[in-house]
Amino acid sequence: MMNMNEYLTTTPALKGRVKQRYSDFIVEEVLEDGYVCKAQRFNKSWEEREERQMKVPERKEEEHLLLDMEKINTDSSAAMAIISRGLNVSKKRIGYAGLKDKRAITCQRISIYMPDPVLVERFGVKGIEIRNPVWSNKRVELGELKGNQFTITIREIAQSEEEIRRIVEEFGKQAEKGLPNFYGNQRFGGKRQITHRVGKLLLLGKFEEAVMLYLTDTYEEEKEEIKQARINLAKTKDYKKALREFPMETRAEKAMLNHLVKFPNDFAGAFTELPEKMRYLFTHAVQSDIFNKILAKRIAKYGNKALENIDGDVIINGVPAIILPGFESVYAEGEAGELEQEAMQKEELTLANFKTNKLSELSSKGERKEIVLCAQNFKLEKIEDDIFNEGKKVLVVSFFLSKGNYATTVLRELLKEEVF
Image (cartoon, rainbow, N blue to C red):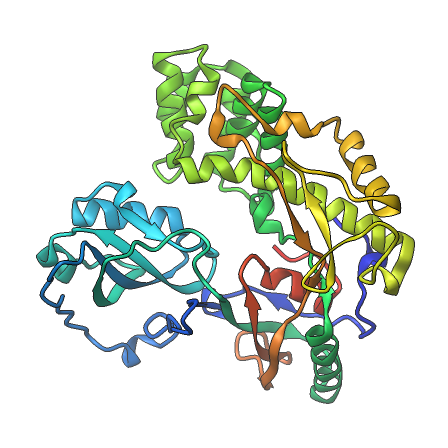
């Protein structure tokens, strides 16, 4: 968690509530060629939603079917698992450019290798829609997007319309110039805030501790059934009993438990039951946590000048870039390098820890990330009475972020509090 003195914008806090409703957070993927995957269904009322008849065009030489996937209150991995079952194809045949928020309406481009067109046309699952089919020679790969367009509704605002407008218009000017490019809380597992903690244990080779932390750590607002299953497993380490107690929605946990029932001491193997791209997120989370801590230290030390160059900075695209550590990383020079090394020492990690033999997909060569985030085309869309919170106002804003950046980072600066 960041501290209050680590906000760089000078506007007063906008006191509101984010993500009260799924439709309050809309994410539309923008591809490298400018194509926008528009939310067209779940952002409308039941009465406004049209019945769609999709027709897959005839295939020539192409092997990948490109589709827009719109979803509501479903994480990307779960949505693609559902599509995999519905179309009777392996999950490995599905390509995507990035993972999207769960508690939101999101639309993104996916590709499916050689699906049955009839099953594609018949596919229908509550909360997921696929449409706009186009055959292509190319699979959609991770990172192949320009960025995301966000339309965000903030509710339960007690401030007056005049004050809201004054705060948001000034904030927009500052946000377009640049904000601290912190990784958002979803990188660390949302409210559970666990991914980086598990990742660190994995990089240190502490596989049993990592498994038990992933399976048993809980948080206050977690569903009671899941929470109780975690607590019971922590007490008993009875994997067979836990496999019965964990509900169906905890797919990842049940896959790991199923492995541990068969191979009780193969803790590294339990992690191989998770999708490979999901496993790599553990390393990403460790890197992100270290990046955030270095950036927070810069802000605590330099205040409003933290995003400017300091001694020894590595410059990318004209701005300083902080280390995302890996086994081929090189620390910055001077004071910038000292901050990087101090953060690593505090975490009791070395660059060599990022090369693993037992779970090689956790290995990372390392890279750098720019410390400045620019919220492009920041717009105040509307302010009106909040029909779900009597006597309060609701605000809608929109903006574009290039890939790898988080809307919650922008909202954190606007609200001057942590956003999950």
